[in-house]
Amino acid sequence: MHYKIVAGAVIAACVAGAAGQCPDGSAPQVIDNMSYCKAVQAVTYQKFSGAGTYNQITHMDPNTGACESTPVGYSGPLTPLDEEVSLHFRGPLVLKQFAVYAPSTASSKKRSVRQTLHDRRHGHQQFHGHNKEAREVENHAEEAKRGVGSLVTVTMANGAVMTFTNTYRGAAATTPTTTSTATVVAATSSKAASSSVAAASGKTSSVAPVAVSSTSSSSAAAASVYASSGGWTRQGYYSSDHATADGLVFLNNMGGGASGVFNMNTFGNSLSYASCDATKSAASAEVLNGTIPDNNEIIIMTNTPCVNGDCGYTRPGTIPYHGFHGAQKAFLMEFSMPMSGCTSGGAPDMPAIWMLNAQIPRTLQYGLPNCSCWTSGCGELDLFEVLSMGNTYATTTLHLTSGSGGGTPNYFSRPTSKTIKAAVVFKGDNQTANIRILDDDWTFDSALSSSSVDWICSDGDASTITPVYPS
Image (cartoon, rainbow, N blue to C red; front, side, top):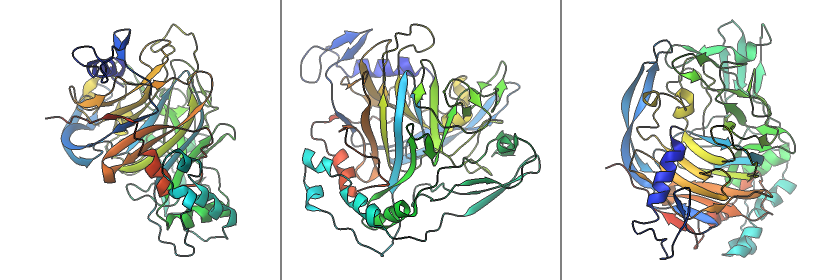
C-alpha cells in the first residue's frame, strides 16, 4: 500500500520505547533502523474497538486523475476492518493452503454434535483435537439437501447473459455452496467472461464470476450439521497441491494487459486477474500455482463479483470482487517465505502478508493518495511483513490514520526452510484480532469448532497491542 514499508517501520520503531528498550527492559536488536525484541508465537490486538472517519472514494476521472470522496464514519469492534477486506501476499512466498471461515447462522436440527472431553481441555492438548467433532460428522454425514443461494443474472455490455450463484454473505455468513458457482449462459466471444458490468458510478468494469470446485455432499452435510453446534464454517479454500480454489479469486495490480485497464499519466494499473505464476495479468480467473516470486503480489478475494454497485464505488475498468466482510471472520494459511537473495526491484527478498480494506484495491492501491481511502485511515493490518531485504523477522502492524493504529517490537520468525500454518481470527464479540502460529498437524477442515476458535484467541503468552484510534 502507499508508503506501507516506511509507515510500518516508523510505528514498529516507536513501540520499542523512547529509551530504546524492549518491554522487558532488555535492549532491542536494531536492523536497518528498526528495533526488534523477541520472537513470539502469537500476537493479540486487544480492546480493538473505537470510532473514526475516512474519505470514501466516490468518483475517479481516468483522463484528468481527479478523484472525489466523501467522509464516512465508523464505530464499534474491529472497525474499520469489519468492512470487506482483501488479503495480499508478496513474494518471495510459497502459499500452500488458504481457508476462510465465518460463524454459521444455520439452524439445522438434524443432528446435534457433542463436544468431546478432549476438545474441552485447555492448553496445548486441546489444540491437537481441535476439529475432531467436525471430522466425525463429515465421516458419517448423510446426504443433505441444501440451498445454494440465490441466482444472479447479469446482462453484459456485449449482450451476453451470465448467471451465477451468489456466494456473498456479508456479515451473516452461511454455509458454503456445494456446486460450481459460475455458468456463462450466453457468450459471444472468448472474452465474454470478462465483459463489462455496471459499477456504482455508472461506468463499466470487466469482471466475471469465478467457477469453484464442487464439494462432496458428505462435506456439505458435515458443515451444515456442524453449524448447529455453534461452529464456524469454511467459506473458501485454496490448495496448491490440488490446484483448486473454492470460493476465492486471485487478482493482482497489473491491469491493462489481458484484463483490467491501464491509465497513462493518471491511475496506472487497475486490478486484473492474476496469472497462475503471479507474474502477469490473465484474461480470466486462474488458480495460483503456489509460488509468488520477488516483487510480485497476489490479492485474494471472494469469487463473487461486484454488480449493480453492491461494492460501493469501484474504479472504471477494474476487476472488482467482494472481499471478506464482518467482525467475526477467520483465515487459516500455510506458507513459507524462502530466502531468495534478490537485490533488485521495489521490495526484493521482502515477503509480506497483509490485509486491506477492500475499497483500496478496488479503487487505487498504488498511486495518488487522494484516490484511495488508505491515507485517511480506512484500514490496513500487516500480518507477517519483512521490512528489510533478507531480514528473518516478520512484523505485524495496524495502520489507521497517521499517528494511530498500533504495533509491537516483537516479531514472528520468518519461515525460510519449511511451511508453517497460521491463523488470523477476528472476534468482534471480545474486541480482539488474533494472529497465532499453529502446529503442523492442524487441518483446514470444512468447519472449525468454537472451542478451536477460542483456543486460537487465548494464548496467555501472546504479545498484546491496544490500538489507538484517531482522536
